[in-house]
Length: 293
Image 1 (cartoon, rainbow, N blue to C red):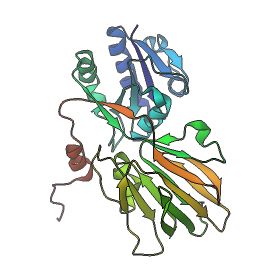
Image 2 (image 1 turned 30 degrees about the horizontal axis):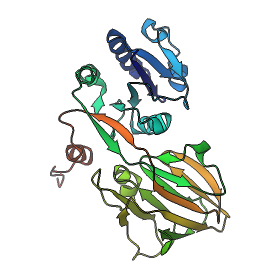
Image 3 (image 1 turned 90 degrees about the vertical axis):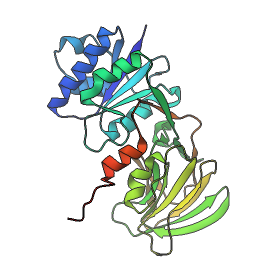
Image 4 (image 1 turned 90 degrees about the horizontal axis):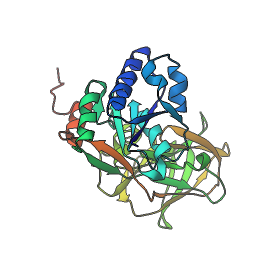
């Protein structure tokens, strides 16, 4: 039996027909459809198509599913990755939001996307994930992996923090700043970019260390191999700091040892002919347009 899991976050009413259309097309191809618990609770509709769907819970094993459909923006896809985890089930991102760097199709192309999947006219784009660990704590309910970045940040409006940082146990630098971002190439177009980090092409086998508002202006972003282990020791006047991975965060006591390294599994995104990261950059960042007037 072919199975598809579907996940979505908070969305406007006009997104419901998109989900219904996706379910109708999947049922027509004789897929069994499973809605995530959060999605099913948000829909709360009497639609015949949606009533035929079953439910899966975040944390369920999705290894035997053919693929997972993420309907929404980049935040929805990041959450979908936490549902998939080490199962590495392929993910189809359907963008119904605004920017949508990660999704490879949009709500008007669902039919064509599913037809291409049926005909095996697609590729799997494997993206590096990061993992953050501490010997002293259970982090993020053991879902301590992310696609975009790990960020060490000051808590609320407290004074800047000091982040003593090491690469493969060799001291690198002490960052006196509002924080430090450790980003994958995928995440290089997100938070890291807004803090002055470089755009790095996917599959470059690198990580980017980008300081957030550093006190010393000679401190600049650094690109390192993704085979290294980055560890840090954080000191703060407030005795706490914020640890953020993608859209999730946890308050950590200062002095708690932390390490960041490449996760042993990857996120596998479905992409189709014509998809290009460079094309996406030009479109989303308005590169190549004369905006001087």
